[in-house]
Length: 52
Image 1 (cartoon, one colour):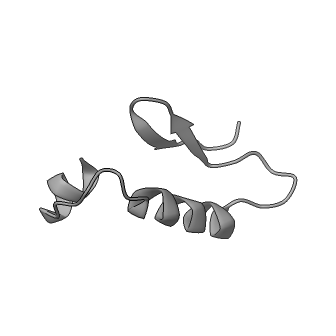
Image 2 (image 1 turned 90 degrees about the vertical axis):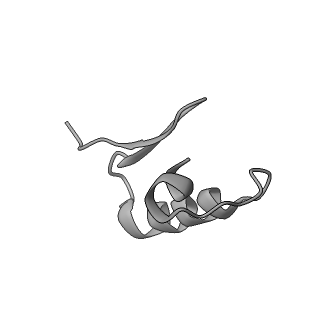
Image 3 (image 1 turned 120 degrees about the vertical axis):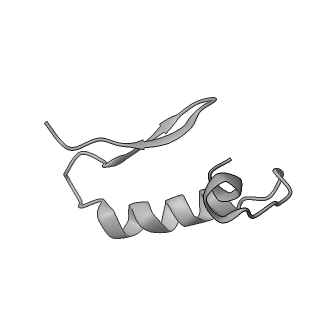
């Protein structure tokens, strides 16, 4: 939905395009020993949460 809503990009939902990008973002953003910034919300997508 994000790709369609923002970029009007239609793709096969069985592909892992979004998951691949999220994985790469996590690798760049998450620091060892620190709480993660990107969280998976099952059935909804992803969210960013600042550490407490």
